[in-house]
Image (tube, rainbow, N blue to C red; front, side, top):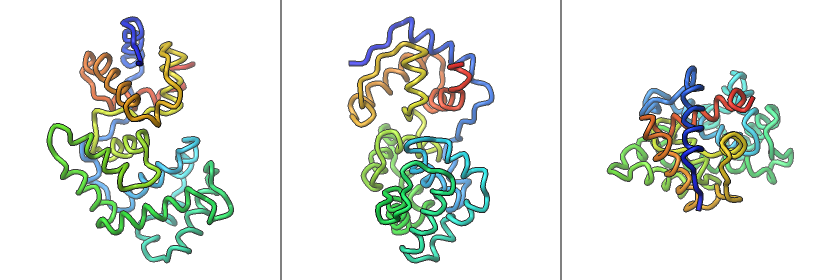
Length: 237
């Protein structure tokens, strides 16, 4: 069981208050202001950041590569051509696990598979509409569960990160290496090994931080997530 002492909670709240300026927080239902290309890029970036986030920054700075792997461009290609285009883009930005042997590159094949699934679901915007129609008190949990069910390779972290970026989930935290680094080495929290792959432990930590840190500060989990991720270097300096 993960425990957060009162001292650790106070320290984390101080970190949040000190570093909250200049942080981009996605708006509620931000996906509604995006076209299929922009939404698809969120799905692409979720696969890219597995193993390291910097290549995703490189993609954001390269409009030509963005155009080349856009939803509308890829929609016109057969699967083999899609794989070649996607694989070339992944390797060009230095994406980790992007094998030159296309058939062995799990990221390339995952993205082509996700593309087919999204196309079947009415495109990226159509899938977001389906997610948005899941309503009720547990709507965010239902949306996370649906992404994990429909899209192979999406686990606890990736599903939350995707949905927060699209404005479909607010009370969540996408625990990654940067956030773990702050929690362990700055706050002194002891995290269980491989907890990201264990849904019960993941959700327990998420709920704990939302209750003990976010609620007293009157912020959502997405705010805590974005502050710790975007301000990691300043926080750990």
